[in-house]
Image (cartoon, rainbow, N blue to C red; front, side):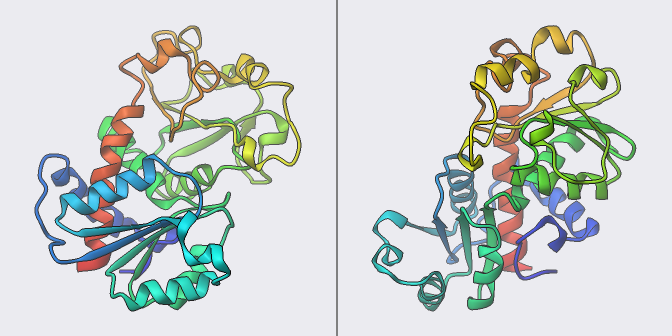
Length: 290
């Protein structure tokens, strides 16, 4: 078992399946297996869902949580990230959860701490716990995912969620199809299309992504509304098809997914949030207790 979780590749398939068994239990139970453990969260980039999900997960397991306010931290006074990590590590935490706008920072920080370090998202590189909870959600509805097809729709090139999901879902046997305008597609050897209607009849899952406007060097579309006209997941698009719809959040309503589809029982966005707490409980317990 790896000491840190920086990318989805840090866990083997067997370890992930074992982790999912624990997550299933945590959906209905909260054993205090991390009582007297200390977990620190440090987010250098805005987050609502991931940060609160980790903190709720830790507290449900009985751990003490310290959330560092980056705006008031010594990094604002010139302290290096490495010194910040070393100082936090000296306080004796059992795990540190970090998010940073720059890709690779969690991997570097992991070399400067003795406890487990969990990547809560780094730039456009990776978001391993999001991918783990997405696959967990898919498996709960589809069972064996070998040979199942998923369309990932949106700003794939700039998405750490897409990167982590592509690796993980393919490793479990899913066929991944990328759907986006040309400027949002990465250089990767996967089936691609610029029109969701080309593949809507063959996919079992649609994963819509938020347009990462903060990572664009210049405007790609005249407006998000123009993008939504082409790539919004609507009731007219999905019809009565037997599929499920995912989104990592936050959702741009009527741009990523329409109001009507968000209210459709096939849309599992809130279920992803619920599952995310259970999966993160399993990740924390696994890394800290083994």
